[in-house]
Length: 152
Image (tube, rainbow, N blue to C red; front, side, top):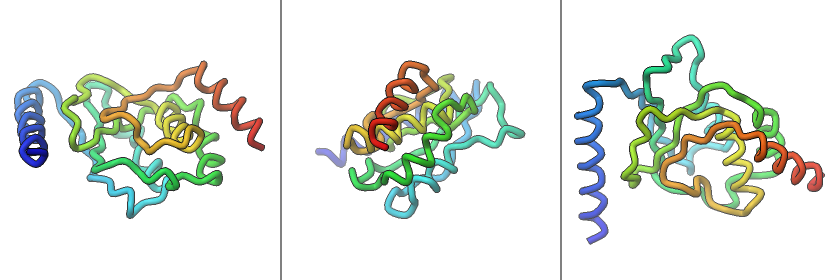
């Protein structure tokens, strides 16, 4: 039954893409396998080349699953702390089983960095939602900086 549900979800996604794709263009990044990339490598894939960015397009990365809780390290968090203020555009993240296609939703590097940091900070799997188009959020920046200063 689970297999049928997965195939049905994929079918619905493809139908929506076909219908909506006639009005707007989606930019899909390669499927990401967390077993084959480090958090730093993954974060680099979330960046959108600013010379090719088009605000009329949807930028999406498809992922298969969540990460193990031990995937993020303190050293990864230290690297990501440099990006939490970033307003640069980033790919939205969508698990392959998600039924929500984030059309006309935008993400930032800061928002994505904070979600990765939160997976470490809160000891959660990443991502903790099926579809993620997080944006930079000043309240979350303050909360994460406070936590980081207490950790160090």
